[in-house]
Image (cartoon, rainbow, N blue to C red; front, side, top):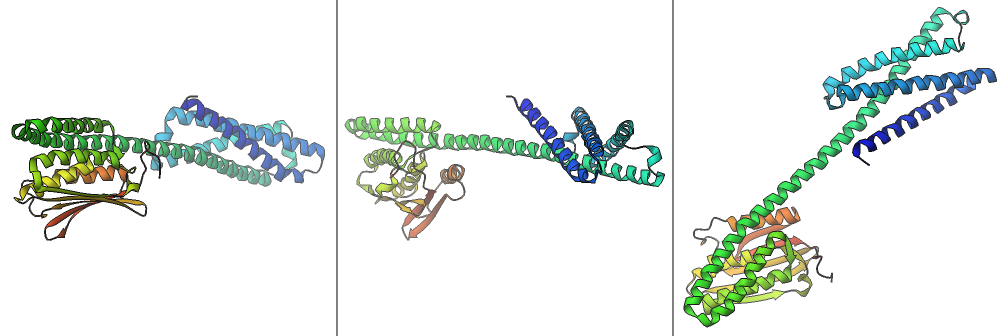
Length: 361
């Protein structure tokens, strides 16, 4: 069923149901005033026909609204039009109702005084006008609510599209940076130790494959991410030899938690590039993970100082922070801090979300 047909069906359901309910309420209120069965029959017939007039007039009003495009008008322009239309329709309703009542001989001019007749006319004119204003309020209120809902859905759809494009742009900035660093390391290894270079090429192939697949995968398990980090550290260990020391303390209940692809690898890469590799005596990379309440905490600590970052633009850290924000919302965080005179720690907090490809523990 198309959206237009669905709205049309809802309109007829509300129109028929609303006017039927209105007629039932009016008849139940005025029926006790009838002093005879014949009078009661005339009263029921007259109110049914009068409500039929209201039903027809509001339906014609709806056709006019759709043709004139009133639904798209702003309230300052719409309100005067609605008031004028309701007054006009109330006059038409009053005229048709009088013709109906006198045609059915429900009233005779000889039976009523002029002042009573005018009072009756103006009171019902006001009554019809109020009924039409209520109908208009409901009709336009439903339309504005529906338009607002559609606008919100479209807004979220556009934001999701922008978010997706932004995330892909951020990832495309990270991956080439990572690949070029790895290629430089491989070049040095081939010249120094061709036999070990074969092993490193295999590790690099796994890293590159993982990097390419990450373009279509926003998150992976911590276990998969750490496996690539291990390949990267093994590659750097060949280049830095005993200048690089690695320590890991990974809680088993964190291995199936989702983390952004390439996030930890980027932090480890920065720790080596701006910390360990800049020091003649080398340094240490320490990785820890644990669960604290509903959050996964990951710490990447490296030997070095925050001020000694050389030509770093901070792009990798900004990208990592943006990716966390886009994927996990404001509750996720990434902070870089000095934890000792000679150590820098990247502290990550991510809401725990078990990866769908892994069983929950």
